[in-house]
Length: 439
Image (cartoon, rainbow, N blue to C red):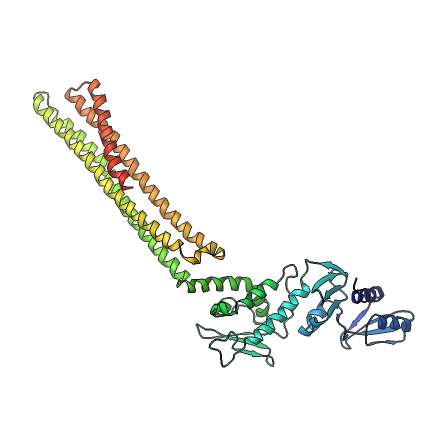
């Protein structure tokens, strides 16, 4: 163990069992012990400075030169400054009942002088000061066309941003903010990403970050804005980078979604119109069957068998023509849907080729468009099913009705069966030729 750490460990082992008291007004730690002169000599030998005693009470100043000393976590968050991280840091009392130590040489955190990698109290505090200093470098400069921070004012304790797209200013106080964050999560990566966003290759990205600040912070209580600014930076960066990539690809995500939604609605409307035509044909089908049955009954006249046969054959011929013509109409509708589906697939293919959707960060938005595509394709499948079902039902019932008429004329069943099969084969050929080729 490094001699520095050994000395501080000895200091803690000496002072903590004697129940030290924090004198905030004097900026000292006091504890009572026997032989205070001997204890002071030990403290000095360990590198503890500004030590004194009044009788049996030993006083240790918190203003050490070789390291930064804090009584407890409240004292740490209240007094810590950026310069404190230029040396080792020690918190005597922690919420876990043991000292916290920050090794400035390795930038590692120790709990009770044992290395710990799951507590980021020191790292996150340092990140807070890094944010402040970096924002200070982004203050308004006359020779720059764009400046991220419009006014950095130490005297008034605020950082001011002016909205690039709408009127209004956003102020963030920082001096009196206690940098207490979630200690189980490191903020270092999000700061590094934020800082990298200002590199030359990301020329316009800071503009999008600045714009996002006005989406996240105005509704937040003024004294909490710095905390939210830092903690929400991953989300701010994600949205800003997303919009930045959209900008680079000459896209607007909101506009793109709107246009795609309008296109989707148009396809839905066209499918509904075609489906409406099929529904009308479906409604007309039982009516035609009823009318034909009634006509068959009316033309049946035993006293005029020849005339009756001719009229029934005319009805059969009409049914044949009606069935074939219906198949032709269905093929036209199916052809229209096939063209619509092809156009829709082309539109989506062009959209999917855009570089914006190749980025893993935009998976959620890619899923949005994929779900919309699936909904339209589902409607296409429903329409195909409606067309096929209607054709099959009509073919079967029309064949049966034609066979019934031919049976009335006197055609025997041994001829009706092959004729009905032949008719169904013809209908299948028509369906397969017109409808399936349209697909």
